[in-house]
Length: 343
Image (cartoon, rainbow, N blue to C red; front, side, top):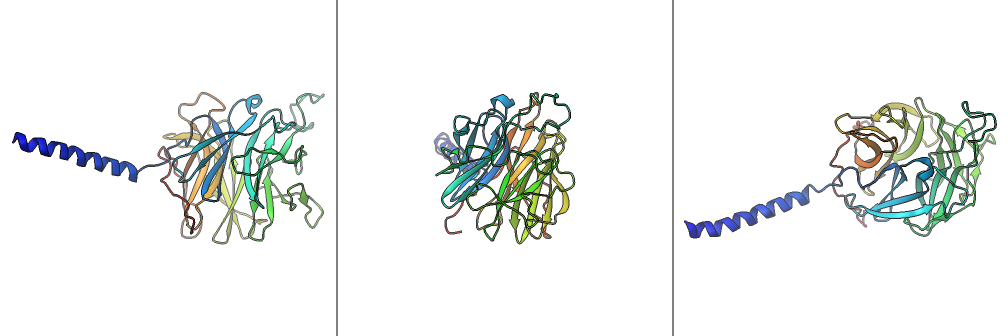
C-alpha cells in the first residue's frame, strides 16, 4: 500500500495541477480595473491587430498635464505607454487635459483632446474681471504610431469658443461609411455636431452656413460617443454628476449619423455591490465578429477622493431588436479575444 501511495500521490498532484492550470487558462480575464492608477474618460479603439485605450489621467486639474495610453493584443494583458502627449508638446495647454479620442487617417494617428477647462465670461459665478477665464478648448495632436510620440498639429485649439452654449470638451471623431469625419463634442448639457475638413484643420460648414449644429438629446450632460452596428447608429452620452454616484450612460439610435435620434434609455449606472459613478464611456468592436465591449470609468467602493476613478471593460450585448442590454459591471472584466488577421 505504501508503494502504491507513492505512485498515486504524485500522479494525483500532477493531474490536479494540470486541471487547475487548464481552468486558470480557460477563465483568464482582464480584471477590472484594467490598469493600476487613476484613469477616467477612456476611449477604446482598434488599430490593426491591437486594442488601444486612451484615458484621462484622473487628478487635480493642475496635475492633468499628460496622457498615457494602453494597448493589448487580446483584451486581457495591457501594456502601458506613458506620456504619449504632454504640455511640453502642447504649449498652449496648462491644465485639465481631458478625454483623448484617437483616429487613424492616411497612415497618421490623430489624438483629439480638451485642455484648460476653458470658461466663458458670462458663466454665472465668475468674477467681473473674469480672472479665472482663460484660453483653451479642443486641440489636435498627430503621430506616426498609435503610441506616439504625438506633437501639436495646429499650435492652437481646433475649437476655442462656445457654439450653442457647449463647452469645448469631450470630443469624439466618427468616420462614417462614406468617409465623412464627424465630430461630436460638448459639455454643460449641450452636444454639437460638426464635419471635419479633409486635413483636420477646420470644419466644413453645414448648408445653412453654420459650423456646428446642436443635437443635444434629452438628459445629455457630456461625453458623446457613436458607433455603427447592422445599419443602426448608436449615440451614447453621460448623465448626472461626474463627482458622484448619479453618473450614468444613456443612448439613442438613428438611421444616420446626423440623426434624428430616438432616445432609448440608460444602460450603465452605479451598482453598490461593485462600484459607483459609472460613466463617460466608449465602445470597442472586435473586427469580423459581433463581439462588443463597453469601456468606461467608475469609482471603487469605498471612495474618498473626487478624482479616484478607474478604467474598466465589460461586455456590451444586444437584444434581438438591436436595443442594448443593461451593462453588468464586474470585477472579472472580459475574456481574451485576439483580433484575427483574416477576419
